[in-house]
Length: 381
Ligand SMILES: Cc1cc2nc3c(=O)[nH]c(=O)nc-3n(C[C@H](O)[C@H](O)[C@H](O)COP(=O)(O)OP(=O)(O)OC[C@H]3O[C@@H](n4cnc5c(N)ncnc54)[C@H](O)[C@@H]3O)c2cc1C
Image 1 (cartoon, protein in one colour):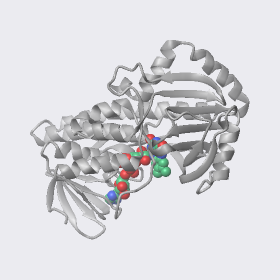
Image 2: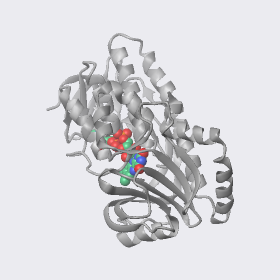
Image 3: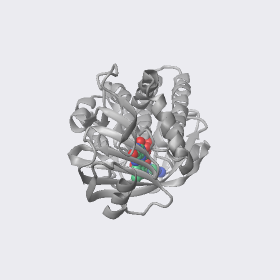
Image 4: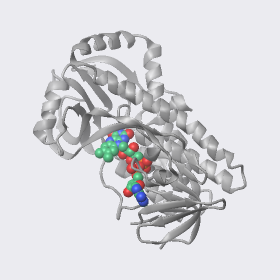
């Protein structure tokens, strides 16, 4: 199944690796994608695709399908129970996509994989990378099976616990937040609109309620200790103490749930000779602002362009330029997510003051506009 040689070996078939692969395959490059899992994950995980991500994905030929399959959320609001503190309308943004596209990561991955298949590519599974050795002419990648592949370049799109990053000796600097995040996709009746992402900054704590296609809602909350699998009673408790008051949102069913601990870390460099990093292998942060997968996909588009240019005879310096451009964006994304997370989790006694300050700031149109530009990613154009 494995080729002996390839132009680019992409390790990891998550949204980042698939984007790199489609970006190279459409330009006629020989790209090989491997993943250690026997099959792709079938869970929601990252559920937000921002306007800027759709813009950069345009040349890859997947945007129409994504836009048709996702739900268009026109507004983002920060609320304290029923009171709107900060309204952020996306409608006026100068883009072909003036909304947040709500779509399950499973669907985003399926759309990218279908495009890769259309271009003649495929994902080879299960192949777990255990070693990468470089020399002047290329890199030799070895697998748990004992097999090996020779590649001109290796892309580490193998997630937060990246083996490729470790093999390249690149440090992943940062730390973890003390809070744990509870996450559930639920069926609801009443209480919340179906075209708006809401971040509740309520006295009892933070809560995100976001509509998904098919009538479900994504619920995310920071709690001292999140249950392994949140049940109806747990999610109802979160909504009753932090969500809407005037019209109660009633949980009918938990479709999927999980919990996670959040880290904020960035790789010290995105390139070590013939090894390049992208996506969660290069940066991880809080889900506040829904930026993680978006940053990975945008890395993937930029990296495919740089690799294509170098394989076509361009200067390898273009690969350094990839890191020099994308790493500062990751720093900004990590900083935005960090600020939102700290604002969301301030001490209970400070929360009323925080909310008054936010309401005042929200009366300034430039503040609301800046927030819309940053959340949509258009600020990184
Ligand atoms: C429960 C959960 C909820 C989340 N919610 C959100 C959210 O609401 N918003 C948000 O923005 N983000 C969220 N995320 C994060 C989001 O899923 C990631 O940012 C995104 O998946 C990163 O994509 P990636 O392609 O870089 O890495 P990944 O999706 O992690 O893909 C890496 C791939 O590499 C493969 N791999 C790993 N090691 C090897 C190896 N040695 N050899 C071969 N293959 C290997 C893995 O099998 C995997 O398929 C969530 C994540 C989880 C787990």
